[in-house]
Structure formats: structure tokens, C-alpha cells
Length: 107
Image (cartoon, rainbow, N blue to C red; front, side, top):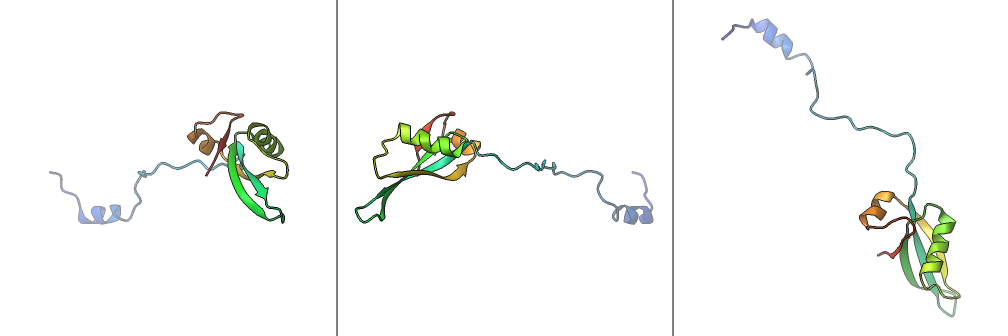
């Protein structure tokens, strides 16, 4: 066993470790782009008050086209309102096993 002077041992405790056990995470300056939309279809009663609300995921990045896609694929009756209300990321859509152009009831 090699003898180490006490002052060398004390000085080494004041220095930082040469490497970290944590891998740095990349940070993106670009905002997350929507891959799709949560589209809400609302039915109104005879007084014009919102009644039944149905939610759908539409795998379409454009807000207007996502609403139109739901209107084409889901029975949306006269007097009902279909509107894209929230952006949805690709990770959620892929997690739902959806592909571009798909519409699926949500929630």
C-alpha cells in the first residue's frame, strides 16, 4: 500500500469530480408543433344551452382541417358544433395507435 501525505488527501476533497454520472438533456429552442387536435362536438338544447359534449382526437396538424375531418367521419348533426379546442402532440396520438388522418373518440 502506498503512503499518501495527509495534505494531498485533504486537497483532493476540495476539488470537483472530473465527470458526472448524469447525462445532460438536449434543450430545443423550437416550440413543440401540434400533430393533431382535440375536437369537441357540442349538442345544444332547445334553449341554446350546451348539452351533450363528445371529444375526439384528430390526427391532423391543421386546426380547420382537423374540425372538418371530424365532421366528415363522425355523425355531426345540424345544430351541433364541432371545434378544435386543444393541440395534441404526436406522442399522445401514437400512444393511441393512431395514424395521420385518423379520428378517434376520446375521454
